[in-house]
Image 1 (cartoon, rainbow over the protein chains, first blue to last red):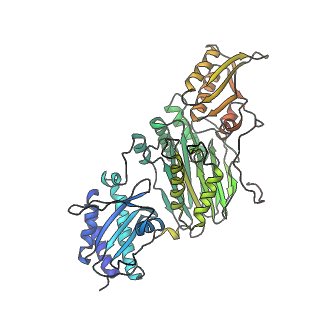
Image 2: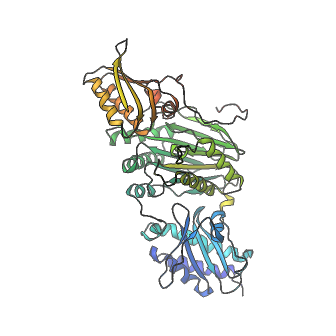
Image 3: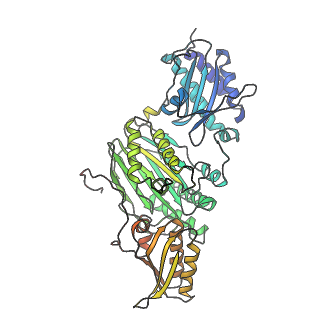
Length: 401
Length: 122
């Protein structure tokens, strides 16, 4: 007898009720308890921060499956495309993407007591609710313990990495009008780079940061800059005032010149009008219909932390479907062992190639970052951060499972 | 990094450096500029970057620190001769502007953007 959406909704309601008192390390067990009446088994795989491997959440009394590579298998397809997948030879098994909003967190392997069809709309509705709740739970419970966060790390996190990651927003956000996807490298030693965004009242406030130097000092400079800009923003400051707030915070705290290059931008999601302040940062690239049509470098002010009172705001009118690529210099200065640079032209070409393949924005930046990392052959180099923003009607629709 | 210090015909103090201005050479550069200023105020220092082939964010920071110290003592610090990627880094960070690098200084290899015949923004 097939499982109905109604039966799954009952499990979801049970899980919601149980969730209040679940400690993070018991999340997987709580999910399985809620679906036991349906004789289902779930295994939740979380993607690691570098987005290369899916790692099963351990559950008491069950052997923990081996980690799975993202770039292979049905689980990888489910993660990459945010689509449920099924093996032709396993009628009782589905791989379901786990997202929070549109942030890709991993996949769940679901095993049913009998055959199921990936095309059953009733089952799909029920599973969407279950998988959606699991995604929300992972994000919500991560704040209360170390287990879930630690499980997404394939290596120990450095102090500077810990400081920075705790201050970053999720890698992906989408609405009907906009998608934002970002990535930072190197995952566990990231220091001076950061990205930020906040979407409210039909405005997307975007920012990319790159602090001078390396290691913990750079990381401290970056998080101070982030905090100053966010504090100003949430108090209603415009872009110029937010930049000045960062100047004040940095000069007030550091007596020896610590600066952060940055782009602070405000995209009006109704009109597509982009306003931006470039504080000594590489110019964002505007990609239209698969071609880089502009580098946004009208005017610049000094890096944040080098006081500059000129109100240097620039504007650019986006068209529907336009994409904005923001990056730090570590992206285009990534060198292979023979000393060749990755280069901006190459970056744009690869972004376009991945987009033409129909990949989702978070997948495009994931592949770009891996391309840069692999080219470095593990050599420690400058931090590299990418943010891809698409302004288009129904931009986020394809990212919903 | 190597530094060569002289006074030019107009009596300006010139610090000509060559090699890389980056994290490992920043302190030596600052010490050189400090020695030229010799604790006296109102000194105009020009940093000749024509022999510099590498400048990173720590090098930029060293220039900013030297500039701030010079201005604080009533003097000035400017740069000249930047070329290639060094000029490009000074342009992108906008710090070249602060240090009196003229817009006419040759810039480095600018990334190309294909032109689709549209009017420039704004």
